[in-house]
Length: 314
Image (cartoon, rainbow, N blue to C red):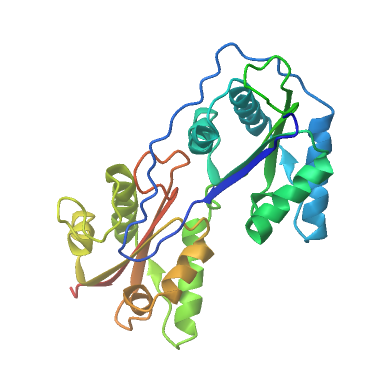
């Protein structure tokens, strides 16, 4: 039964939130063990498969995927696990753990694996037919790839087809540009100007309050204006040294750029949009934390806070 074929695709993107409801993405994932490995070698079929995948992407106006060594190492571990007879479902759940183990911070990841005797063209065609427009192979946000081929000769898996393939595709997570605070300020003031409202100016005390909120959300794994100690925006501003008559706060998680965060607030139907358009506030502070290996239940990588205020009259 050497013509028996298995194909499987999995992929995941980190989400983003900008309101009060938390994004829960926590998973308990097993490591892939690889005792008594088969001989892993770089095979000329591996770059050939990358070429075929990139051709399919070009046909759909997608940018090419770049070879990435860590993703290749993970693909090799997956192929070895298949060779040794590990269940395919455990490979699916173990991919995220392998990415973290290899030190690869991801914004999006996915994988394909197959046991068959097909050509690269036939295999990619089948994968695309199965995955359709949602296939990780042609995801426009994906940018890097690792590929592994392993001959199944010597495997103790009954009736295994001659070729084992594993593909890992991902987009690395990166922090916002260094000028993120000035960019948020510019975008907020542009939004206010469209409603003929005066610009806001940065305030060091409000910066301190906003940064404390972003750091606290990451450290204590929550997404709310009120922290686990029941401290809210006003108390944070006071603790930061800001004497205020009005304090408002926007928070967001998961948006990789200042524009994404501000656009999420603008798109909201409730508090965040109204806070930025409040005619009484005159100052703001901005906090941002990037956590490439976010350990919590809320694994959003990017944590944004904006504290808007009107100072207390002398």
